[in-house]
Amino acid sequence: MFLKVLSEKYSKEILLLLNENDELYFNQIQKEIDVYKSNLSRTLNKLLEARLIDKKEEIGSNRKVAKSYYKLTELGRRSLKFYDLENELLNMKNAEEKENIKIHIENVGDNSLNNSFNFSSKK
Image (cartoon, rainbow, N blue to C red):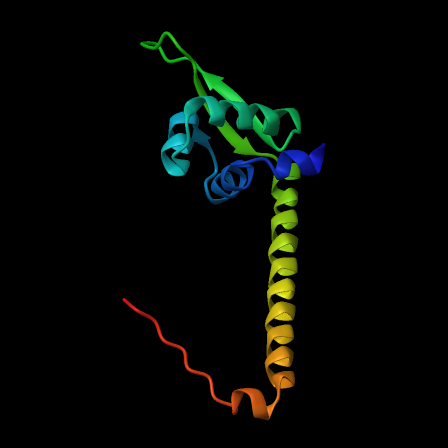
């Protein structure tokens, strides 16, 4: 379940945002990520259940509704390594694909392509 929560849409953005900021309230997160409130609420609840973030509520003297603040937990901070690993694996995959393309081009042979490639782009 832990990896499932980390791979949820918006989880990565929320965790990285909270890592950059000590504490943010709901509307701040929503403005930064530009996500519907219902989707943000659902994702935040999943992150809370997984204990990747903490929530505290403050009720002001002139407010009827509590203001919810979210903060990354130590587990949440450590889970960011998952995204580092994901990036590392993607970089390895891309490097491998580039190498395979290079090998394929080298193996095409001199006769068929005359060792010349023309690339053009239209604007």
